[in-house]
Length: 247
Image (cartoon, rainbow, N blue to C red):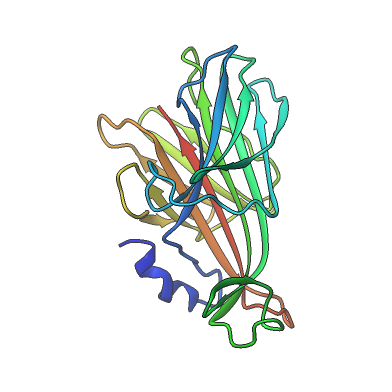
């Protein structure tokens, strides 16, 4: 079942509900493989299909950083590039590099004219109002390196992974704690929607076994929705995290 088809049921939950969206945001590099001494293009895609960005994300509340194998962080300056948002990154080290986007979208309301900034106090007739925060990580490496895993960065909501011989263990973390019952979905090139896989266990983990002969790229999407604090001008706090891997 696609994420779109579960939207109505997910938003009805009062506990840790699962908010689903047909669109997802991912970060990758072009080319997929990195080369020391070369500059790569870091791309932010937005859409249904991992191979095609449908439109650039808005840059309000957006920050991007590259994390080198040695741990050094390089702030990136994203800009709109056609249907993508892109930034340049000079690869100075061999190994696994991580590219991280965070975006605090604030409070948005779904009105008859689309999503607009502000909550119920601004849009009293909105279909729904929500506060949205998301992160997206892309991981790429040089030919002499292999991806084995990553560490948490202390973001409000993030997804990290540890690789094994036959699959990958995803861990969803919210405010420093493992997040149970986060919905995990998968995005692949050539697919017109993300595919729901299941939910994290009580340790915030989900294991994905790669099909025989699998070759990436692949994106994993984690989503969680919770009731807003009392007296808030919106109904739900929505969180999303994406992890994209390329081979």
